[in-house]
Image (cartoon, rainbow over all chains, first blue to last red):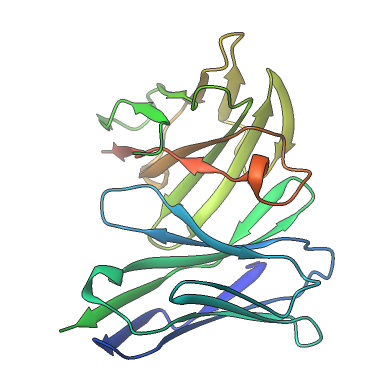
Length: 110
Length: 118
C-alpha cells in the first residue's frame, strides 16, 4: 500500500514555465514533508521541506504548498530551467520512518 | 558530494548468493538509514540505526539484515538473493535520530550501490 501518492509520473515543461508536482497522503500522524531531487547516478538530495502547521514554504524558485485538510502537498518550481531536469520525490515522515512517493521525472526543454 | 560513501558502486551476483553492502556516514552523523530503490516500487525504507542500535524498521525482508558498528559505519547483508532483489540500495545518514524537524534530522544520501542478481 502506497502511503504517499505522487503525480504525475513524468512532466515536460518549457524553460521559464512552472512545474507542479502533487502528493497526497492518508496518515494524519505524518509530521514532516520533505521533497528530494535526484539526478541520474546520484542519491536523492533534500530540496525543501515543510511541517504540517505551515501552509506554504518558499526557498528561491521552489515552493511547497500544503493543504492539511485535503491531506495534499505540492512542489512548485518557478521559472523552470533545464538544470532542474531530474526526478523529484515527495516524502512524509511517520514516527521514525519516511514514506516516499514513486517519483516524478521532470524534463525542462530549452 | 553528500559526504556519505557507499561501496561497492556496482555488484553483480547470482541467485542464492549473499552480498554485503557497506556505508560510511558523514563525519559526526550518528544515524544511518538503508533504502531500496527499484523501478516498480520506488524508494522503500528498509531500516535505521542510531549510534549502533536499531531505531526503526521498514519493509525489510527476513533475508536481509543490517548492523551499525562502533565506528558508525553500517553494513547491509542480503542473503539467498532473488532476481527481484536487483535494485539500487541507498544509505543515508543524519546527525540525529529523526525526532525533530530539519536541521539535525536532514538525511544525506550516498551515491548508492547498484545490485544486479542474475
